Amino acid sequence: MKKKILALTLALVTVLSLSACGKSPAASAGPVKIATKPMTEQYILGEMLGLIIEDAGYEVEITKGIGGSTSNIQPAMEKGEFDLYPEYTSTGWVMVLDHEAIGVDDTKMFDDLKAEYEEKFDMTWVALYGFNNTYAVVVRDDIAQQYNLKTTSDLAAVAGELNFGGNPDYQERADGFPLLCETYGLKFKSVSDIDIGLRYTAVQSGDIDVTNAFTTDAQLGNPAAGLVTLEDDLHLQVNYFCSTVVRQDALEKYPGLEKALMKMDGLLTDGEMAHLNYLVEVEGADEKEVARNFLVEKGVLKG
Image 1 (spheres, helix red, strand yellow):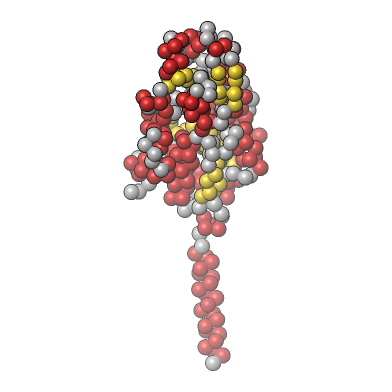
Image 2 (spheres, one colour):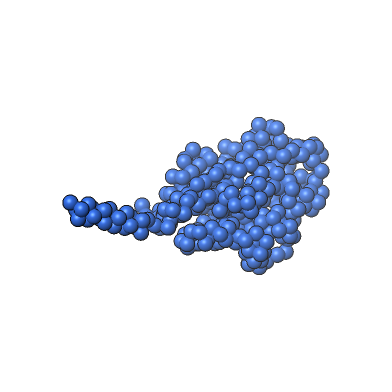
């Protein structure tokens, strides 16, 4: 009887040991925490990152639409509240590192971003997604017709009669709203801080007349939106290539994470990103399904 009990005990210990040995590091590491800014493009990119990381064997936790964008996400990253998030090169260069972006070579900027983030924050940038989401100035169609606005320079003569509203990131950054006004001689009737996801609603409702936009915004490709993009005739805007900012300790904690993130490298063109934004914002598609379908179409995920 004692031999039988001993045999059963040994068998149980063996099973438990095998179970423990078979448990993958990914299962015990906890979820990879992803943050996104409050805009459709970031929601889609966050889902893409999540799907790719899940495919690598890790759990994910996505916090969508953090108000204040970089202003609040970067400090949270520094505290370890998030592991990674999609960011734009000139945004990190200007808002986080407090550098001047105009005239800086894009390749040099990306290399220096990685070096300085590693030194100052123990973070790095992984992969360039391929698309460039730079700034533009947008007005309602009726305003454009009323004042015959085609270029941003045209705006200078009538800015005193118009209300501008923009997201906090753009208002605060040195190469954003202040430089726009300085370069084009713009003095608006009023200036309002508006969350990034509410700018177009505010323009279309008449609460503001002018706002900053991004070149991959879905609304700009939708004729029904009644919006006009003014030509940047003085070539003010710099490039904003999207990439992933990630904590170094996350790369160490999740050994397959960097390889997974590299699957985003060169994945999207400007037009493709705008189209995905259109599917979600105008067609009403679910951002996770849009992200999944695109990754399958590109061969990043299996169908």
